[in-house]
Amino acid sequence: KIVGISEKRIRDIHRIKPTREAIGLARRFSLTSPFAQAVLDESDMVIGGVRGALLTIKDGYAVANAGIDRKNAPLNSLVLWPHDPDLSARTLRDQIRREFGKHVGVVIVDSRVTPLRLGTTGLAIGAAGFRAVEDIRGNVDLHGREVRITFRAIADALAATAQLVMGESSERKPFVIIREAPVKMESDSGVREAKLAWNRCLYMSQIMPPGHDQSQHN
Amino acid sequence: KIVGISEKRIRDIHRIKPTREAIGLARRFSLTSPFAQAVLDESDMVIGGVRGALLTIKDGYAVANAGIDRKNAPLNSLVLWPHDPDLSARTLRDQIRREFGKHVGVVIVDSRVTPLRLGTTGLAIGAAGFRAVEDIRGNVDLHGREVRITFRAIADALAATAQLVMGESSERKPFVIIREAPVKMESDSGVREAKLAWNRCLYMSQIMPPGHDQSQHN
Image (cartoon, rainbow over all chains, first blue to last red):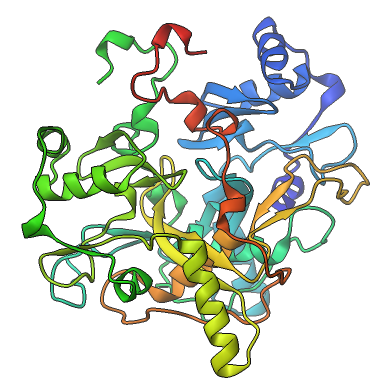
């Protein structure tokens, strides 16, 4: 949130002109139509929704409301994700190195929901300076057998850890510092590494994208 | 995993007799048929799958392979979730209090995947001694407006934090201790509080349960 605000990724809700599509979505899912329009503008695709939230694809991730939030935004405005969250993370990492001489990894965090779970945890939307996804293919378990779950979402785990401490409402903790995290420092990495194809995703492979011919769906 | 093993929730794969349904699922999703049978036996519902994993409902949660794992299991065997993970967590909490005089919260952790994300983080499958879901309805943001994302999945955030340190293969860290976690200690709570109805879930509301009439699907 603080990164979106600092990059002036803010929209004035009174200056948003909702289209007919936005008005329809707003009515169907109990949203305001300027908010629905902003979500349409920000998302690659709107898949559907529940009361109060749209399921969208945003930068290749499946998130609520294209990451748009009214919480802790200036009055009558919406805060959007940074244009390129991995780039924002890289810029922050470089600034910290320049100003303080510290070599850090940076994670930009937003809230996420989990299938069939009440409540939010943290999701990494941008990362820099460390390996966002750890590849453990070929590692063996205690019995010497190769492990089958082969990647670890390190950036997301750090995001969940950070969000636990940062809170969601008026805690005024825009960032946290995690020390001694078991990560591999690496300069050229980012959350973009964590993208998974639709047909390899356990959840999304079960959902037909809008306009998909049902008779073709497996 | 360690909790399932200590409760002897282990199946010998050579003693599993796959049904025709299991053989079909195994062929379709590149699994062994005893493994597919064990998943069928453990799950409330099999929704579909991708290569190497089935999307199942298990104890009301949407997880891969009903939580069954071959990793770090005894040879030729599968480790299942505890029968009642919240109860297992409560038992552990009570034992720790009795043996060490320490008042702790306990989270039982398994790996989980995230929609359109590569890699696993931790998911809380059982919890005791603290508020698993924090209700922040009515809280206000920095500008005094009521927050709309109204629950925080505290147990899941702790699980993700723990899994970051525990690792996934041969790390031999069956448990971790988290100090000074910002949680509300409370005796009568559990992960069961974190269940969300299918039609309120952003992801699962988009998926038709097997046998659901498509013409009725919204």
